[in-house]
Length: 296
Image 1: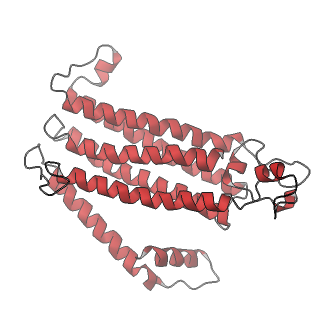
Image 2: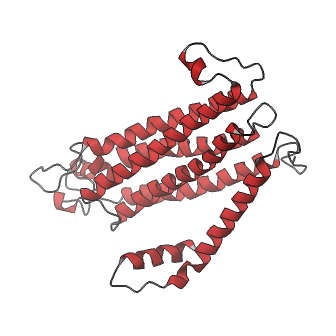
Image 3: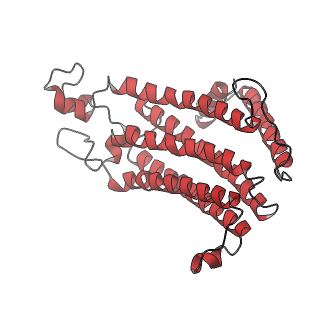
């Protein structure tokens, strides 16, 4: 409820010509405080958890399932609807825009796309080498080094999904043995192996955030800002996804802390499993975002 007012207030604070009403931040700040308290309370309950007392659902259709797991699936379904709004908005607007591709394939028959002056430059135009042109002289603004961070981020998230699976698999393997060679030195015990796999996932997720900021800085420097329709859709969609990655990193810090203190085993590895479901969703969302917003 407070998000729309929060956005308006932030825009006003960034614009010297408009007076910002701090009262507009009240609902959003209160909601954020409630979320922080709730998450902190869950962490305090989960930290000593050793696998006993997991609440089980008793109502149809979730009989016998862990309540936390059911709740996470419901949350993921709501997240799918959130990201679906971004994709539907982008695709709906993209079909009406006079892009470089539309101009080249219209033969002059596409209304509103009669010359290169009518082009709507999307993020993919700026990201692809030679993808966008400022004028009819063929001056290209495409930059491979702007596309490269997004490509690396795709592989980083895919690999991070694999490392979180390795952490869960190691935690649940009661017969785990330390590998030989250099990996054995890095993971001499199962507790250390779980922790290090989680740290690897954390580092890959952090790389995603850093490269995302690098990518945004390139786009802004090239003139692709949030002040346009195409810019607002791109930055809100990728920014919302980046926010989900950042939240995942915060939760992962807790998982690393617990792995290094209490430890995870076959009895209490549910926390890694539930977080893994969330992280796989974030990964899958990016696998869809990248071709839609970066390559199309």
